[in-house]
Image 1: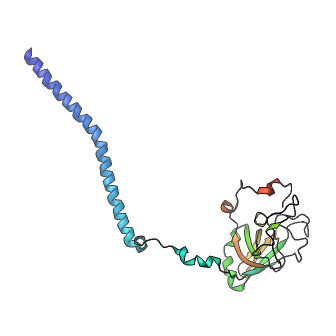
Image 2 (image 1 turned 120 degrees about the horizontal axis):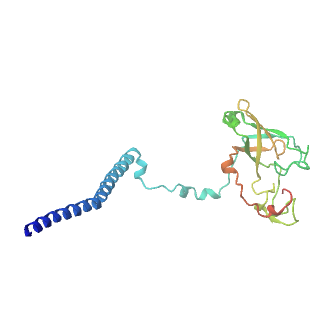
Image 3 (image 1 turned 90 degrees about the vertical axis):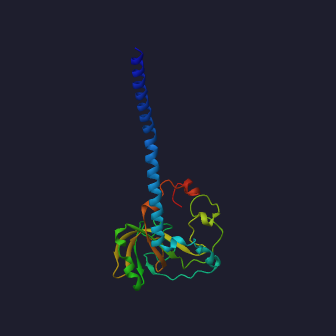
Amino acid sequence: ALFSWVVCGRVLARWLFLVMLLALLLVCTPLLVSSVAWFGASRMTSSSLVMSSAADPRSMRPPLEYTEAFRESAHLDVNLSPIGFVESPYKERFGTPRQPVVSALTAGGAMLDGCVVLRPDLADALVDLEGFSHMWIVSYLHLNRGWKLRVKPPRGPKQRRGLFATRAPHRPNQLGMSAVEITAVDHIGGRVHVRGLDLLDHTPVLDLKPYIPYCDSIPDAKAGWVDALSEPA
């Protein structure tokens, strides 16, 4: 009987040892795998950094502060040259829309067609513009003279508003910005036919930019005091 107990004890001890060894392996194996993976990843990252550094010398230099050299130039005068002009049905201020989409009480009572005529050397820059339905016209309101810090908008209460909170055409730099519909593009003759102009005939044009809905349209944007008006300002 004593011999049987001894044999059973040895067998039980071996089984307990095997169970403990198995448990130890189950606990340590994930840690070992993670350590190996981390070590491999760190070596790959180091190798990638070395390779990228060797491929691009700029990654080894300190970052440059480009703006410091031009800090003073921010206060200098800016000289711009027109890229073209507008052919518009509007010949005088009276009857010209205040905004491209505001056509009531304007000449013709609806959005009229016009054209942007570019300098001959810029005609090829119109390639691919025909794929867009609308564009921005950045213009120079050359007939305006003088401006004020506070203005009275033509719509709403007769209250003076800060100039930069309005679309008043009399501004410090006389710049205009109009969103118009593109009806045709002639990138051979350098002409863009548009609809919905709010510019006088022969207004100088400074730039054209395609209207891109995902970055130009903000559906939940607020319009300050304009939101309280019953009609467009």
